[in-house]
Length: 345
Image (cartoon, rainbow, N blue to C red; front, top):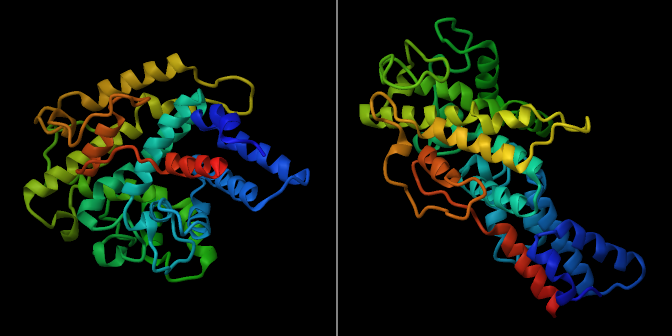
């Protein structure tokens, strides 16, 4: 069996896919044992988590319930059943963002620039929902949305400035957990990542921030519903600022790189220097001062800065959007540590 010393370069470089292939080949050749199969299963689990294949996270966490990292993995997944008692990333997006921050850094260490760009793009997908989480009390869970919103949300009332796509998403968010699993899965696949755009327009309303005070990043609501302007003005302005920051990132050069990389056509994969340049321009965009001084990135960082980040300041940005400290997790490294210990037995 491959031993810990032999596997050291793969473990140090987080090449769990290669290690899984080696262990699988050994097992296929008849050199099998309980320890070898356990190591193979851990390597496969680490690979799937690194791939951000969130559909598999819950089954993986159930296969390794005795491991300390299994609970954290369960919190980063999306539920497989519409009314499952375990809500995972629908309850809070923070564990998923901790994992994505870790993935960005590990992909950079593995010198995989395209995967860095893909993960940076995924980070933008749910960022407006992360901003809303502190107000909603959940990460946009369709099981709870009916109790969090109201009035014109998800209706055909033309006084609501939502686009047709936003209306469809809003309506789906109210009914996604009332049907079968196929309908719920379709909602998660096609609509849930769009929920942030609809919520963002509700946050950026004319009763909260006047024209010209802050950057124009998307459509705003001239006549907000009552649920959207609940709370104090200070709380609403804070939410507006964090939503605008999320949208600034989502429309930034680092995210645009994903759209400009025609994967599969043998060209266009961004280089490390292109990523660095795009991130520098992104940081200049998201950290620029606002007319009213309200940019959340202008204040003190919410946590200790991550100096070793592949994209320096990304944790600060996500923390500013969330309104709480969100740094890179250690989930994949913890699985790797379990794998190393198994190889050393």
